Length: 228
Ligand SMILES: Cc1cc2nc3c(=O)[nH]c(=O)nc-3n(C[C@H](O)[C@H](O)[C@H](O)COP(=O)(O)O)c2cc1C
Image (cartoon, rainbow, N blue to C red; front, side, top):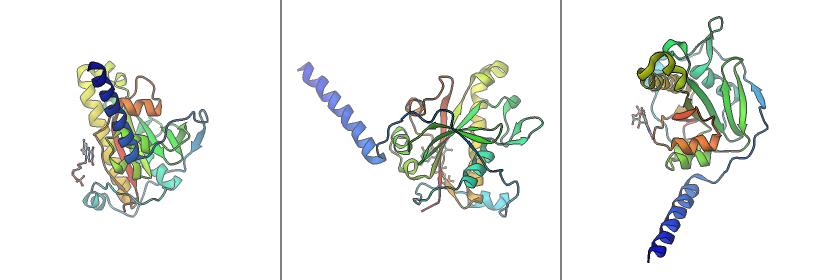
């Protein structure tokens, strides 16, 4: 009887995985071309939409067209999130407690997954295939993650902030992720794109998918694309 129960539990578990993959599409990570670098075009620092207009137009968008982002759009979104805006002092677009910058950005697109490197404004490839389906499964099957042209994963290295701020560090790091996320949302609006903040996901699954270093914890997910 107990053996039957065990097999039943295994079958239920397998069915859950199959259902999630069915909703999200199946793609498993393969080794990327190690350290392949992509230089991003210089970001624009002026635009045609005011910040007031971007704030008033921002709305969570969960359904996207099947349309890629240009490299200029990817560049602009990465810059708005973590780009260096004061080169001599290395300060970035979003504020950071003690300028310790505990956040790392990963961009998951149809052609692979990339780590954003603020110094030099470039991407480093970490996976060669489309991981959006697997990322969708890690986000409880939310279709916005599969449909988006690009999913931004914000990962935190809490240790960068705990050294100076101790117990307050966790609060600071999450607050900073909010700053970065809002910059992405407003930049998306200014580019004619849509986005949605996603907090419901399994961080360990995302860590495994992107093969993140053990000190990096995914804390926020932001699908971005052309609204449907
Ligand atoms: C921390 C946080 C987590 C969220 N997680 C999700 C999520 O997992 N899935 C989702 O569809 N929306 C998520 N949202 C978006 C909210 O549902 C949305 O912001 C809210 O309904 C207000 O709508 P608006 O963004 O259009 O103003 C999240 C928002 C925040 C701030």
